[in-house]
Length: 361
Length: 196
Image (cartoon, rainbow over all chains, first blue to last red; front, side, top):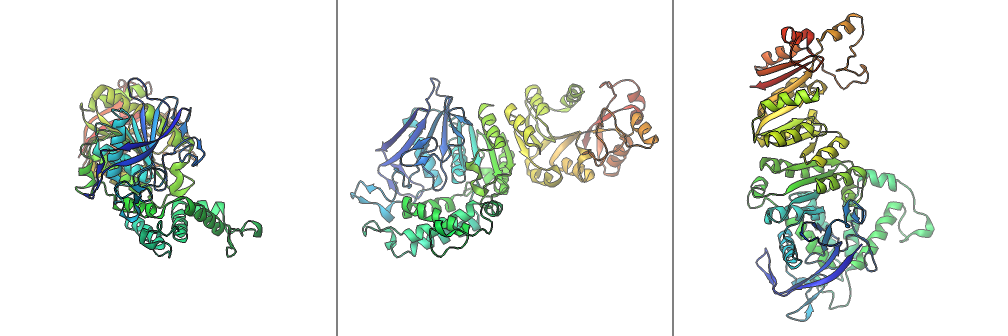
């Protein structure tokens, strides 16, 4: 698979939804396959909350790509056929400009001063990337969870630039419960003594415990009760492989391990920023959702999963109904999914066939 | 017979109309309506394999149990709803009929006729009917609310539903012959265009 990973600089900067401006910024971008002569085979993948530009294949720094089960040569999204683009979103911590990168104007780490971005800002920055790559229209824009929100926003903001949108395990806005969960995560980071009001870089520490607890909570919301029961049940962790003295059950050990691993990789300010992006998104905030979808020309494939209680299938159905009110050619399918909210990351026969049939039709 | 049925339905669908097909199967009928009548159509189906086929054909489809979710589409303003060979599988066919006529101006319903003479012979000999149109045994069938042509028309009368047009199909898939004279005895299937 022809893969290119590069940091692209945007010297023109970007006006943000908040009214603030980034005078220049960088996006870490990964592409797979090749753009055809007619430029008709470009696909944009939008990553979810803690994802990054590395969607497929294996890399030294990021391991296996977040959507490797579905993206690659002869896979569901076939990189022999399509030119697939994925970037680390603005505010992230995998190479793109974000709180942990250097502010060119002060030559210091942005830290807390990095402006709050939004789904719309991400879409606008991806549009700038699209222009730089000489792509005129995306054949398909897709993502799960927060990535699905971007796919939805793309079809709203740039109706002539998206032919098909894949909106998976997503919603047109976060629910009160979603926001509540995120606030607990943020609070655990803020209350970590090493957080230093977001300027922990200066003290050469990271609020590790805070991020770890936040991620542990996050993990619970990404999985389903059924999945956790079948995977861990009430099994006790054996003594030799305990990551913490205090754990008794396997599930505790799993969360400890996952939280620990994540806390060393992910920037705390990015974590807070990303959760705020998720919380603040509301596709229909200016009008109703029906009103927001008025200009959409793309076809939709909306997929929800029964086992997902973070963005349950009803949220996808709301988008479907608003789409039908606007005469958008939209499909809505609910699959079982074995992995709760995370189900969108895993390939299954039906999920894979739906996506490939949709892209090809 | 499928060709015949789609032909009848085709003739009732205005061009450029907005259509919803409940129990759309693999999306063949909607695909045909796109091509012939440039309709905007949505299918509703519960079977994943059939849903995959719809998407393959480019037919928009919604995975839904019709028994549970007809209310979801109330705001969509359809010109026509279609329920072909499915109404007898629903828990509340009477409610479904009324719902369909609330969410669309007109609806097309097709149903197998339990009054067909072969069914009657089966019943007369003391057994549940098994015919080419109703091939499953009583313990396997999804048809939980079978009725005769007469029963269905009585229901329409009771619910103040207008039968705008109707066609009866005989065992050869034609409209003619005895099924025209005595549909309740000779038609295997009734095809109705309804309005409230």
